[in-house]
Length: 196
Image 1 (tube, rainbow, N blue to C red):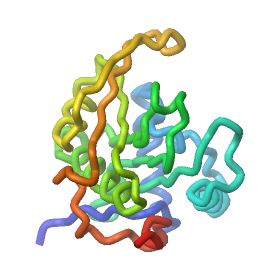
Image 2 (image 1 turned 90 degrees about the vertical axis):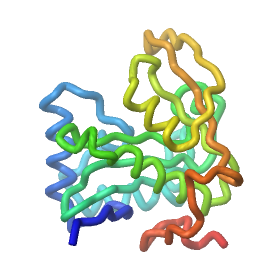
Image 3 (image 1 turned 135 degrees about the vertical axis):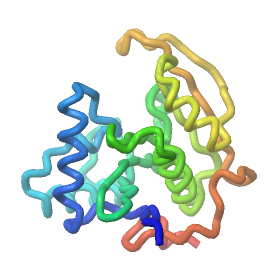
Image 4 (image 1 turned 90 degrees about the horizontal axis):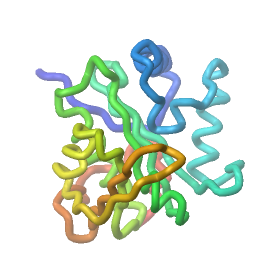
């Protein structure tokens, strides 16, 4: 039987695989996206507590909002990480959106990003988010294609001087989109599982 994707909150069991994903990105000189990949994790239980607190909106710096982090794994290996902002600030709507995601370089071009985003959209839908906003650098063709494959509708683009690049904005309507099916169960420990 082929290994299947598992979409779940971060946990101790895949600690080494998670760290190797970060190492792969670092070795290639790639940015750590989504941003929680940059959180210190030497104290892994403390790292997990921090992520859980963030999902409850606790201990978040000014200007940030509650957000949940997820892993997409297969065969005991973390292949991708996503982060879902529960609400948007004006700054995040302009550059960041509701969802950020990243895939281990060795797992790219295998449908991982598409599945990771699809599952994260389902989590957003369970939280009652009516539409997800996503942004990507105009030069990031892989992210653009992933967003479009999940029902993204191009809304606008803008030069963001502090990034030195043009950011494209996409919207995915979750109430009507087939991209985020309701039948996906909430992962254990997912704050969205409490939403009816």
